[in-house]
Figure (cartoon, rainbow, N blue to C red):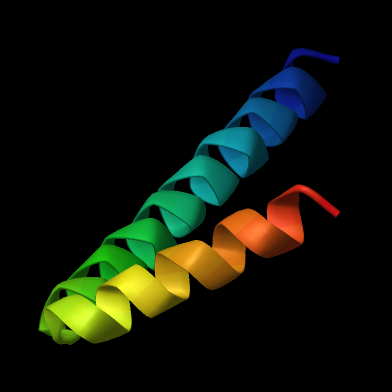
Amino acid sequence: MSEFLLSSEFAAISATFAETDQLAELIDEFGKLSGKEQDALLLDVRRKATR
C-alpha cells in the first residue's frame, strides 16, 4: 500500500512539474508578443472566461 501512495504522490508531483513547465513556456511566448498582441490576447481570454 505504501508503494501505491508513493507512486500516486510521484504522479501528482510529476503532473505539477509538467504544468509548471507548460506555464513557463506560455509566459515566455506571451512575453515575445508586442504590446498590442498581448492586449488583444488578454481581452480574448477575458471574453472567453466570462461566457
